[in-house]
Length: 60
Image (cartoon, rainbow, N blue to C red; front, side, top):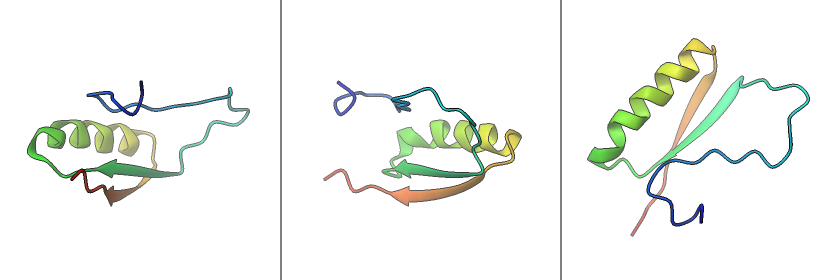
């Protein structure tokens, strides 16, 4: 289900004991329709004082 999702999905398999988002990896295909989601995510992580690393994912 997650692999076929049309939206971004964050999976947390177990409840974290010490939830700290110091470093975040954001995977994106850099398509035009993903730009608004990317901007929202960067804004959220900025608020959380996280360091965001973007990774390009080739969807072809």
